[in-house]
Amino acid sequence: KEPDNMLPCKMTFPIVKPEALNSNSSDSVPVGTGMFKYDIHGSTDAKICLNKYDGYYGNSPYIDGAEINVYGNSSAKYTEEYSFMMLYDDAVSSDLSKENVYDVTFAGNIFECLIPNISGSSCMSNADIRNAVSSFIERDDLIKAAASGNAEAAIIPAYKGTFCWQDDGAKYDSDAETGAKYMENAGYSKDESGKWIKNGSQITIKCIAPGEFTEHSLLAIRLKYELEQNGIAVVTETLNDKDYAAALKNGNYDVAVMEMKIGSWIDLESVYGKDGSLNINGYKNDELDGLFGSVKTLKDNTAIKDMYRQIRDVILKDMPVIGLYIKNSTVIVDNSLQQVFQSGIYTWDLFSNIDKWYIWETQ
Image 1 (tube, helix red, strand yellow):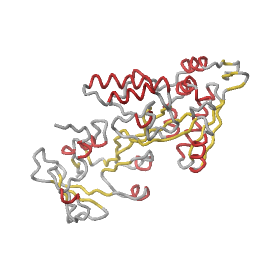
Image 2: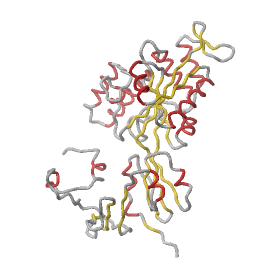
Image 3: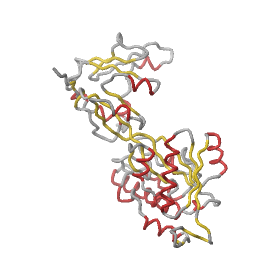
Image 4: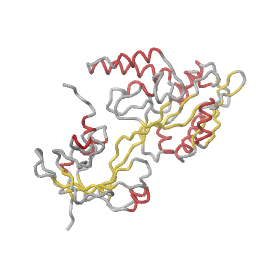
């Protein structure tokens, strides 16, 4: 009676008895009717052991059991032996270089973007300039330079396969011609050397990046190169966390390199809504806020998809956040473990055919 589209996600977590929800209860052993059962004797604080459940109502899995380990640091996980490892970062080269392994890639939850300063003091307060910057960017090159090629180009924080992902409304490849039209709309003209000039001065953008991650620095360097190839001067600054936060607060930037953690469900309002928790630059659009309110009342999928198209159109016109890419997560699989593949857009889709997984033993 009350459909829940997050049920598959919730079902991936251990099911416990109702009494275990009491914080004073010590009975937290998982129960349920899955194809594997919890091995209370083999499991420890460091690992979870699962055994095949003979009473499972569906197809019995080929694998008799599994041992699940969670590693506290990267060095440990890269030196351990395993059949199946999920990596939620792009530093997978050391594992891919191993013999007898293959990889399965799926969408991660990190949205890399540029936050433009939309206050009146910055050139990025002009939507035409924001769209020009977005048009000049070659996202595939940014992905190669900063994310080791392990990401998918994205202008808005939405996964392929969701209502928000509509390829007809966005271009991910560099489009110098479209970018030039936006610059002209903003009152700039190109001089003989290819620089965009207004009132006798070349447009200059200050780009700040947090110094905690090398990826952000590499991204800023590549961004500078691509924009300067298209006549926009760029000054980059890599800042520590304290100075980066201060620059955002004081408006001492034109664009800021930033990553956002997003969910696989549709939640654009948190980024673009006036009161959104991820609305960093104070963007406000009454039309968009109205659409966010209206889409929550719809039940027909066709109507919902059409309204998300309208939401997307407003976002692409204003470009309050310049999306770059969504980083992929990766599974490294030993060749002996067969039939592991991604069948959908969600992380748990990796396990949708776990009953078909099997171990190939060489003689």
